[in-house]
Length: 371
Ligand SMILES: *Cc1c(COP(=O)(O)O)cnc(C)c1O
Image 1 (tube, rainbow, N blue to C red):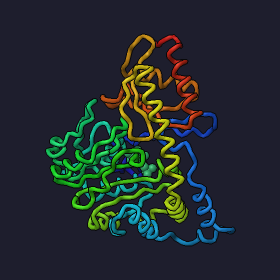
Image 2: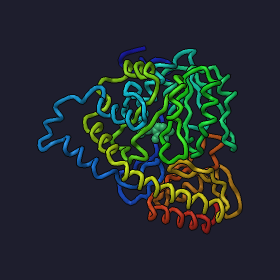
Image 3: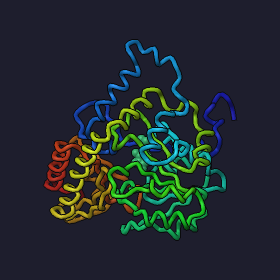
Image 4: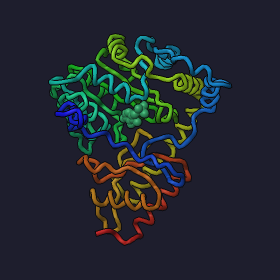
């Protein structure tokens, strides 16, 4: 060990870490971007107004730290969900809250459970914490393996519902079963709940071990502003507040999220539009193209492409993904997960974007198949 090579001073588990791989964010225009589940429509016009008002004419309000508790936002979200403000914590994106939950509830032998597939950030955060992981594989039925969850030995379990990247929503009846059977904290990561039939917020009363996570990044079209929140028992929220950075949500972010919440009519319109586009293409790919497509309760579609020779599989999905990329259409392929390696995850875009995508998939089918 030597300070001349400071990287070698890292803790052993940190030296071995692999970072999370975010979807590509191209810096030049001209891409049809359907790879990171952003909203194809702009946020409510009230958001830009509120952010500009917060900046003011000379930016002098930015001299001051933000409200460390994001209190106005907690109160507004408590009202929206019919809970107490002491049951809400605001994060710098829901990723921030995932990080806080890992810091509070796992480490060493206190493992974290999660399903495979699910949001691939969970194992990364668990690795940073040097904690054990208890992954549980799902199959194409996408039924929640409640008994395996109950017996996994983890202190906290992360469940993405609707699931990523399949888009399948778990029913509240299944989640309630898991809450009864699992003897730890169950985090239901509901990034896509506004596009789903059901959500678990109604289960908070009577289930003190439930944490519901939401984000402004997807349905509220505010991925760039970084706001997410947790709904949970006041005791859990108090723990998160103890571990969190005091000023984790900027003034501009608090103002933007509050403005978005003030315009539910606008958001009901774009969410309906996205669900309509989703259902149209999901049904078209499964019926006209004959591609196995998971029933989606989210703002993306997970479909298994069949090439012109009738083949499916990881290589076919990769070939389709590469072909789309060569035509400047970005979608996501997750080769490392057994269940979804033969699938593409395609964010629901605007009508124009979906048309380009669909025509490019047709062009792929007409191109000479790769070996
Ligand atoms: C997008 C996403 C997040 C991240 O949300 P941010 O609020 O942008 O950090 C968390 N969980 C899942 C399942 C997601 O898809």
